[in-house]
Image (cartoon, rainbow, N blue to C red; front, side):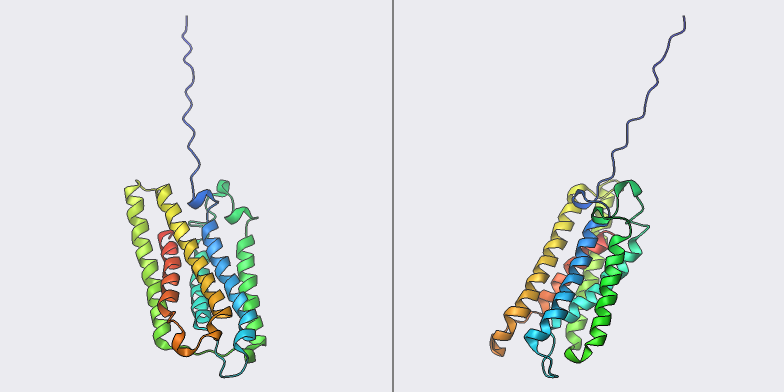
Length: 221
């Protein structure tokens, strides 16, 4: 009598986990959309606080956010098809319909550029070269360090980044964005009321916060 051998089934492969348990690209979407939102807030509110005369300069953080936004947009769109959107079963960033975040980012930033062009007489900038160099240097350094840390974590995780490392990175980057928002609030509601000798030097804080966000993007490359 023939013996029937039960068929064996291979264990199901657990779904891949992404930072904070969200769909791939969600944290990067939060950071990029948050930066765009801060730019819009400053664009709409700063002239009311700083005035529109030639001597009324926009706060330096506005230039830093513009620089950061261009960096984040370039990285975000370059990530599609690589680390974002390559796993259809995991869903789209933030659980939104596919392409929604990209559309919002493009429409939001193109709209911002059009608004600034139309109302350019209301905006005046003072861009110290050393401040731009500092912010750009820290941003790129953060991106590089993030890439090194992310690569080391993947090696230690056997080719996959450990869950705890992904989550720690994500929370630190989101905290950096929240602190950047706090700086925006400071410039809008506190800075103008202080005398020149009582104003703190925010250059290093702005650069470091930009570097923290760049660190996350580097680690997720």
